[in-house]
Each structure stands twice: as structure tokens, then as C-alpha cells.
Length: 281
Image (cartoon, rainbow, N blue to C red; front, side, top):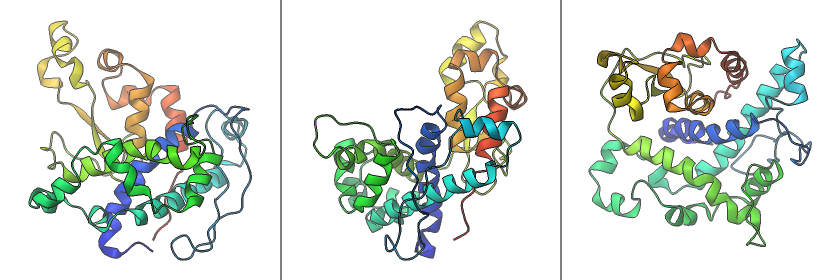
């Protein structure tokens, strides 16, 4: 059970973790990737009585195609994915040291000892020790579902590759908590402007990526006043957008929310991601 005082940070951690999991599971299925069937986990205490949930189907798979053709599969698949991510996130979050579970920007900025103990962004070496108390079932589950990177140099690949998989998650989590709130660039949306989910943290996406601002003005793609246009997106949709086009393509062709959501691949993604809901705690 997540303490009430830590639930906001848990929601952020769950969102950070969902991004790589959804990104991986949204790839086309491969015959080499195992998809075992397992029982749904039984809710209880931390790790007690829990078994890994069935790996949900992903976009690109046969089930995904069947859903698009009107088959009644989407509800169960989305529920499976949400339950799977919630299970993994709960076990991992409760394994973190208490100072990281309750971390806030103001506490971190005013506590030099905390900054020294947990520097940001954390390195892979510094974060490896944080996962020593993670239940073995978490590593085994992620490994079984082909979510962990292979580590051929180790005889215990699932446990040794867990820190590698979780490193960007912890970097995202800690960086978000220790960074001052950004100056409001535009009216903040109440829901992700692609998938429509309104119960998860949002990030702002520069519709004209900052890396090409100078080029966009110099080549006449956009007037300077348009450079700070943003869209408010959940992390999963934010990553998806940057995966479908280069910075230049986004700046020249996909520089508004209306243009993005008009793409067929974005429509399919939004329909799928929008069904992934976390259960109320």
C-alpha cells in the first residue's frame, strides 16, 4: 500500500515507468518474443500473494489488428496493461529509499546532504544499488515479457539488466521532481492533447523543437513568435511523437496539435493509449 503522503510521487513514478513499457509493448509482436500466459496478481500487501499478470497485447500484433476491425478485445487488453504496469510500479516504488519516495523540489533544493547523496541526474552506477531490495519476481516478470535488455556477460541476466532498464526511469523521475516548475508558456491543458487522459502528469512538448529554432527562423519555416508554441502531452504520447518524425520534420510538417492528431498512426496510437487506465488507489 502506498502511503497517502507519497501518492503524488508514486503517480509520477508510475507515469515515468509506463513510458518505456508502453513503447516496448507497442512494437510489432515478434515470434522470438515470448508471450506466456500467467494468472492475474492477487492484491494484498507489498509483494505478498502477487503473481505476474498476463502480458497485454500490443499494437502491431494480431489482436491489435483484430481490435481495429471491430473485435471486442480492447477493453481487456488495456486493463491487463494498466494492471501489469501498476503491479511493477508498486513493487519498484516501495523498494526505493524513503527520501526518494517523498522527494520534492523545495526539500531537495534546501538540503545539501540530500543533493550529495542523490545527485541529479543519477548515473547508472549510483542507481544500481537502489534496486537491491526489488523482489526477484519483478525482474523475472520483466525478463519473461522480454522487457529487459540482454546482458550476455552475466549469468544472471534478468537481475543484472534491471538497473539498465530502470536507469532512464529514475532519471526521468528525479529530474522532474528536482527541476523548478517551468515558466508557463501557454494555457495548461487539463488532459493530454493526443490521448485525452486527464489523470496522469503532463509534460509540455515544443511543437517546433528547440533544437531547430534557429534553423526554422533562418529558413523561413516559422515566424519567431511561433517558436514557443507547445502542446501538453503525457510522457507516453510525448515519446511517441518524437519517435514518428525527426526534429526537422516536426518543425516543418507537424507543428500543431491538429496536424499531429490528423496522422493515421497517431490516431491509432491515441485510441490504444487512451484506454490504458490506472485503477484508483
